[in-house]
Length: 211
Image (cartoon, rainbow, N blue to C red):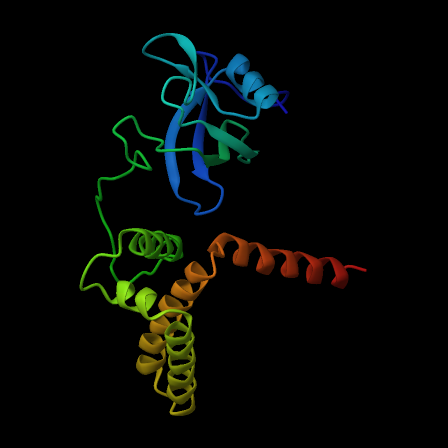
């Protein structure tokens, strides 16, 4: 793994740390050969601190460790993408990611990251049950109401599609996804488990076409 990688004149290589599930970039740090070797041996991220000139184990004091899922090198082999399952916030400020300041954002460009973010909001709604929230209302009414709403929204998507009304389909599809996430939370099914099923099906189909 380490052989062939290109470390800079200070013996360091850039490591972009990414959530393996949400694909959100959590932080950018640096590794030297020793910290990378420790990462490979322990299965958790180790970095090299340029300010302290020493190795550091992410989460050693805070408990916010990062379980390594994969490490990939770029085409020039001078940078790494480290996919992890974080046990807590990546940033020392207590935020999930170090990248919280928006410099530019096009509101018309959607992101799949909104799905796990929305799922997390729905999970918290079920725990906190804030008064007046629509999600609270759905959980209070229970599974029959939630299932009814999923069915209604699915029907609305079908009607919009049959009417060739793209705008209606977009809005109704968004409603359907929201209510489906509520249903998954009520059933205690993690959205990532659903995505894992899709990934498995895709990989099995791709493998079968190569035979």
